[in-house]
Image (cartoon, rainbow, N blue to C red; front, side):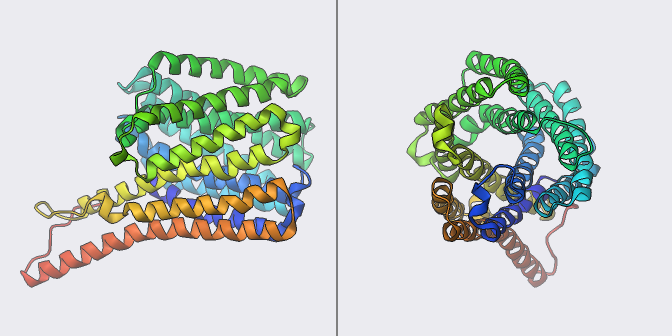
Length: 415
């Protein structure tokens, strides 16, 4: 189930690149420009949404010991998220009110279904209380983000009256800080020490950070709706910088031998996120840079590093299920070599250069270059994903040939 979400990520990255190429520098004229709204939601719902859904559904049972309910609804969950995101992106870009109104119903259903599949097992699990609280809060904010987005979509169509700027900022802050960053901070308690050899985040410090964020973010969002954006910018700056700085600090103890692609993806992503949050101090001069750095570079870098690891691991699990006992399986590093994962991340980093440049100095030719670079970078990620599947199929083919030579094929286990 998690793999179909992760394998959908590159398609959304390519779509974002196509939107960049097609719209030109008009994307950076206004946050309310149809193409800009479509691009933002292609990144947040399509790209990051699939990354977070897939990573969460893999992390909960495999690393947190949480039972996911209703696994049979996995295909439905994937269809709701991606169909809803596609309807919203298309509707915003083409000014199709019917598509946007349909998306306003489909997308909240996806987030509520995810919460229904995960929250009961999270409540019953015998895992760390801090981990459960963090992931539960992230799922709560994710559901609130979807519900607020549904209201905003209805307001955009004219179905309900709503002051768009304030509510839109609250919706965005819930999604970026409450859903994505909070979920990354929660899984970091396991990911950093187990897979990167970094130090464990201090329980007391992380507990204070989590509790204060859960209280401060709704208050700051409410203040933005009623008054101005000072409190909300302060919350994004404080919690974004503190999360990124903590990741960089904890990674210091990682031995050089363990500094692989996942470590570097988090190192680079956290560094860029720290810069993006710092630029909010003077957001008028920074312009589009904080948003582009966070949504276009930092968060995709953090989530892609995890996705590459998970897809490789899922490929190994699939081989283990299909091949009988007594057969030596290729390791995760052979199914998806570190050089391939590193190459995909380097392609993303290279594509970030024209993207940041066009945010700083909008120009039609630079925008098209940035879009082309994004398409190529996400095609590179897709090729790495497909490479793991190709190596698995080649291994299975060799096993069948050997089984035929000896009169018996290796025992296959059901999926």
